[in-house]
Structure formats: structure tokens, C-alpha cells
Image (tube, rainbow, N blue to C red):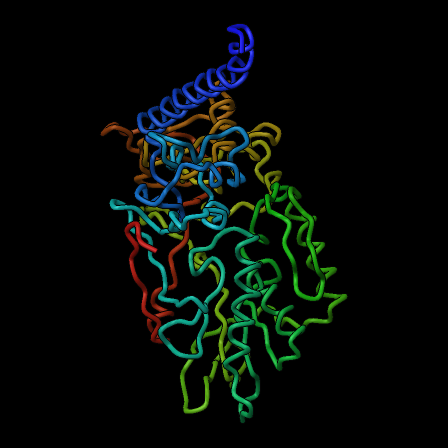
Length: 436
């Protein structure tokens, strides 16, 4: 072989290697820069369920990086030092696709971090709590996404059905409490399985979704609904999604009793007795799909009981021409501020106790920064509300008192886990600090 032939043979693989090394190092620099920016900007705390990668097992194959649905526009996962790492934790939505595709089982999904605990009821792999016969699915168990709630509702009902007694003197085989994504899917599954079920909700169909602001864009992934089949929504409005669910309810013939609050659940020899605002029922099994935000977290400041203070936004247009303060820094708070700021003649402010919106999605953070730069929203970061009067709100920011004129206050400080209700039933609640 001549020298020229030798180099012609060697050149393509060498060129390929050079190109690979170049792009590899460029990705590494970008990953390192993104990771550093996330730490410096205070966006290093994941909001909820998130992956922990075992670097001893990880082979750096990038399967998790490509599977993450948040990767477009944001490096949620990246390769750092040859191993996968969560490099933009604040953008993680707890989808769980990374764990599913990992070929070496190097990923564990956990709640909380070493510094921020998350209260989670005890459930096993079949969604059964420490109280035999009572199951939990959806947001109450830490799964806040619509898709995850639907999947858990189906899976919990399937697991529950396998443990039903062959005969029973109870009025129902299963009572489902809650008609949000998890409860709705569980109801469809119970109907498909031919079970004698009862579904109760203290409000109406949709759960947390029903309480979203008018016109809110709902992000979800294609998912299979019992009876219905594949649901292809990827991005839609709250109203469109609820209309779709109402159509499914009508066509499937499922029964849901609304405006019925469950006050107590007690065990007896062959199952459970439920006392509600309308009566009493007996059942073999119970599925709790009630969500985590039934009771809004309050500020505990003077004047909070004033009629102008509310805890959720339904219609931005009701605030036309008003001065509105949003309290909170999560997605609900930022989305409320953005939608009200678009209403005619409004003056919108946000008070948040932290110096960054680390628990909100990147898209919402970016839009808030744009509105703030355009003077459409005023930000009071590192601030706390100290009192509320009919005409104003008093804040404290960096030890300095601030008074702002105000017509309305919307508190979006999250909800309180119904720990008291769970403990009365006998369900144990653990505080997770970065554990599964």
C-alpha cells in the first residue's frame, strides 16, 4: 500500500474522531456553563419529583438526556464528567421518562432534597397505603402531572381490583374520592372492569385542572384512557381539556357525584364506612385521588380575612382596571400575574419571599422577566407581606417597610397536605429529603 493510499484510508476515521472530540468538548463546555449558571442564579432546587443518578452505574449513554421531554430549549439533563447529571434542576417536571429508558438502572426518582423536605403519604409499589385496603394515586402521592395522574389512577385501580374479595356485604367494591386526572382515570378503569364503584368529589370534574385560570395552556403527553383509548393532547387550554373529559364522561356513562365532601373514613371488619356531607356508604376498598391543595396555605397576617384576598385565579378579566398583588413564586403565581397583566388597565405586582423563582417552569420565569423589563409587572423579591388593609398592602423587603396601593390580593402560596385527615384514617406521612 502506497503512502497516499494509507492516508486516504486513515483520513475518514481520523476526521470523524476530530469532529466527535470537537462537538463533545463543545457540549461539555455548554453543560458546565449551564450548570454553573443554575447554581449561581439559585435555580438548583428541583420543584418536586426528580432523578438522582448513580454515577457508579451510569455509562454516559445519553438515553436519559434525549428522553427528557423538557430538553427542547433547556438542558435539564446533561453529560458532566462522562456521566449523566441533572444540570438544570429547577426545570425538571418529574416526568420520569429518564428512569424508564436508562439501560443500567442508574436512575432513581426521589422527592425533596437534603435541605427541603416534601411530605408524602406512605404507599407501596401497588399504590396501597399502610392501611390495608386504602390506596392513593395522583397528586396526593406526589405525582402532579396530568399524564402521571392518569397513569397512576389506572394502575391503582388495576392493582386494587386484584385484591377485591369474591363476595362482600358492603354497598360498593370501591369508592373513589376525587375527580381530577387520577380519579377520573380510575373511574373509567373501574367502569371498564365492571366494578361496583362510587366516585365522589367535593367540587366538580377536573380537580386542580378546574381551578386553573381561564385560558391556561395545559401541557400533557399522549396517554391511554380506559374505555376511550389514546388521548392525543399535547398542548391545549384548560377549557378544551375539561370539555373533552365531559364528552368522555357522557359517552362512557361513568357516574360521579359532585358537591359531596368526605368527612370521615373508618375501618370495620369487612371494609370501610365513609361519612359524607350527604350520607354514609360502605365499601371494600378506597382510592384517594384528592390532590394536595384542598386547603390553601395562608399568610397569617392582619387583614388576610378581607374580601379582596383570594387564593386562586379563575378569570383575569374580573381585575380589569385594578391594582393587583400576587403573593407567591410558583407556576400558579406567575401564570396568574401574566394573565392579569394582559387585562386592560391593570397594575400587577408580585411579592415572593425568595430572590429567584426557582420553583417555576423556565418558560414562566422568562416571560415574567420580559414583563418586568417592560414595566408590565413589578417584582418585590425577597419580600413578605406584613399586613393588608382595604386600600393597601404592607410589605417588608430587606428589612425595609413598603406600602403599595392595592385593590386585590391573590395568594398562590401552595396548599397544605391534608395530613390531619390522613392521620385520622391511620395513613402515615413521611417527610422525604431526597429519598424515593
